[in-house]
Length: 334
Image 1: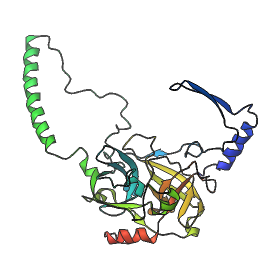
Image 2 (image 1 turned 90 degrees about the horizontal axis):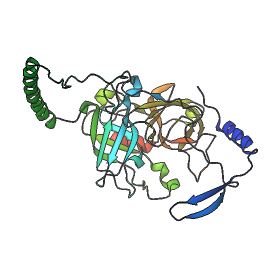
Image 3 (image 1 turned 180 degrees about the vertical axis):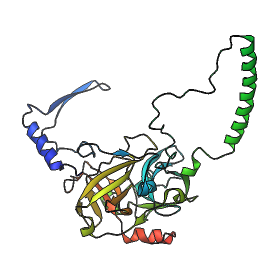
Image 4 (image 1 turned 45 degrees about the horizontal axis):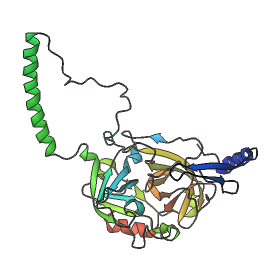
């Protein structure tokens, strides 16, 4: 279903604002004990969110189908514990395509630890309880207070058995990989363009906001992977799209699908109205008519220094020849 134009929203807002008596606010600072008046009359209307119209994002955690399975989540961290949570897509058995800003910290240093999680697979979103789990399951190890000698004897015998089983389980877990390891993989290489520098003016480096992750295992054997293609403006304009990933307002290790339309196309970018928030960065933008092919990377939303283009608050970087060359170098066949 197509989204309502933001111009309609703006018109409704401006009409309602005409009846307002004042845009002045009294602000009291509890730390400095100072009071001031702020006049918002001449302030530009800011886009309050990148959710366009009704929030119609669909949860596909643990139940992704077909092409949706190739969407993955990124958990990056540096030595100080700072990190990022982003989205991406498998484009080969062990290759992930994402945004460059998901792979670098505020000092433009690449994160030394990056884990990729296939949350769309059954059991892949290991922080999420099953959707049908509405009641707390009965604990098989719950202790029943013994009331008779026979119950006391049985209690002690079972306690000994539980202790031996627990010891064996602990030893097994400590020597094995993390839970749901088959649905995740670690990065062994990170690729970002040399021109990318998160510390620079975003308008200058934004065209280079793409990157690749080479994994330590073939996670793509579990998820499948998507194609990557350069499309013309005519192939993209006014086309319905699918966006996969996780917005920052959703629980960690959950995967979501959003639908929208490309409202405008420029040489390097597409502008769309599919719902997205911080955390969706690096997620694939797919055409509904060909959902197995990535045509752009979702990598920016509304900004204070820039008005929405084509009445579309969100945008993505179009796939270009440089991205294809890097993918081919790493063994992806087209």
